[in-house]
Amino acid sequence: MSETDDRYQLALTRQVDELIEAETDWITLATELDVERYKHQDTCPEWTSSTPFRPLFLSYLWATVEDHPLTGIPGRLEDRPKLARAFGFDPDNLPSESTCKPVRLEGRFENLQSVVESAADDIQSIAIERGASIGCDLLKQQHKDTTDDPPSNRTVQRLLRKKGRDVLEELKQSIIPSLSIPRPDDAIYDEEELLVLESIAAIKQSAANDAGTTHGDLKNPDPDLDDAFYEDGPSGETLLESMKNMSVDQIATVMNFALRKTYTRVKPRLNELEHENGSRFGTRAKVALDITYVAYYGDRDEVVWVQGAPEDKGYRWCHKFATAVIVGDNSHYIVGVCPLGSTEYADTDAYAGDEKSYYVGDVARRLLSIAEKYVNIRMVYADREFHAADVIYTLENKDLKYVIPAVKDQHRIGPMCDRFDQLKRGYNEENDTALYVKNDFPIHGPVKHDVSNTKVYTNIVVLPPDEDDDANEGGSPQPFITNLEVSDEVALDRRWARKEIEQYSDRAAIENSYSSVKKCAAWTTSKEIEVRWFHFAFGCIIYNLWLLVDFLAQERIGVIETRKKPRITLSRFLEWLKKELITLI
View 1 (cartoon, rainbow, N blue to C red):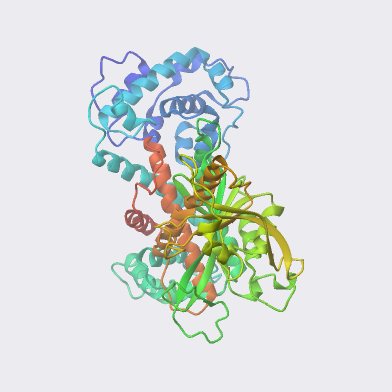
View 2 (view 1 turned 90 degrees about the vertical axis):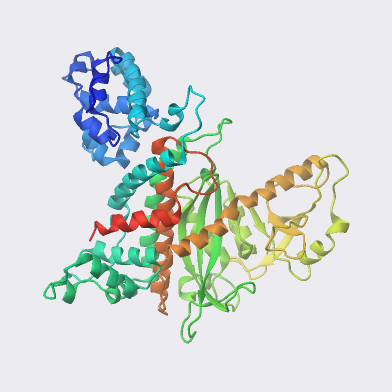
């Protein structure tokens, strides 16, 4: 403890001055603070059934220091049960948002408002001086009225390390228990130990058996051969058998629920971030649908889920997995995932014709139904494989705008691209742009519960070649399909159309995300789709946890900003996760 500073006149601030050290957090501070001296200034009589003075007053002080909206107090405390207990709340019985409305809290603490506001300024100053990560704008406050250089990277990384580990500890208690995997009724090990095995395999990018060996080393560093663990404890084979005992649908249900848990943890923060024009944060508006490929090099005999790989891949066969990703300026959260390839998992009987494979329109329906639980979708970006009549039909029925790269077929869209220089309009005025638009373009194909050559209409927009465009090599024009109201009549229309279509690049980071997902997935030689599907979906959860920890850690030190990549690297996060998981063993 420090000697009390004469600068601070408030009794509350003098307490804080004695309590705060470099490692002090809000849980420690709230536990030690004595605020009973202010109780007589509470305007709410003791005999009412309202929330007791101490927990609500400390919450009011906390929100003021951290510059959080008062109505957000219940949601934030729901994510921080330890802090809720430190304030004096029962985490399962938190106050409602209406209780924390500014008009109610400021009315109840009317006689204490000046005390809280003065104390908040002092607490921020003390925290800055001691290096404690208390105060929402800690890094900004540190240099607010000075000409000093910005905070050093070392300072930022220290705060990220502290807050990141705190966040991960909280998530370990909420996300891991949300997963469920079968085990024998009489097993001597907890269900969590199987998930630890899978996590170790994911972090080390090893196979399940290697993870089982690592788990044994951690569980029994000084082995006792008579220990029941060596006879009945979980091994790599135990984990694989548990996966095989789950159906594809069961894995989908479990994994999508866990993905939902990761997103709902960050959603309240995203909702509070609004642009100056009042529009909501981008993650509430845009969803990317994508299909990723995981190479398969084994024997294809009786492996019904293996698909042919695209021509540009360095392998012939692969497993395909589809994802729905919420796209924002500084976040790409996976909110839905499903496997592709087996007719048993596709509603093929609902389609006319003899072809019995998965239909990409049904994949779009499945993913959108998941994403719609999270956001009000305004725009869908999908990769080229979603260029299909069934997908367009689905998006139109849901009244969703879309932009999708078009397939250059031999007889229709391909020739448009070949004749782009003759068809394009533009460059007749300053700041003009060249493009070609074909409105009400018909596309035929099978549609669910309809005929095999159902006709749907879309708009074709062909943009000039792009040097960075990998999908259209050789300086070829870029065709897209969209239901946006686009035109190439005048320069203003052309500029607007190009701007809207080029926002498809917002999802470009999704392509890079899959390399990160694969770094979060365990390796396997198993032919069982349940094993491969479980590994990929679990990798998506680890990937989401990485983004979530990065975002929440930044939020808690007050340095959220638009960034194309996280402050906390994936390798650094995986090391943190490994250390946290060891505590579950």
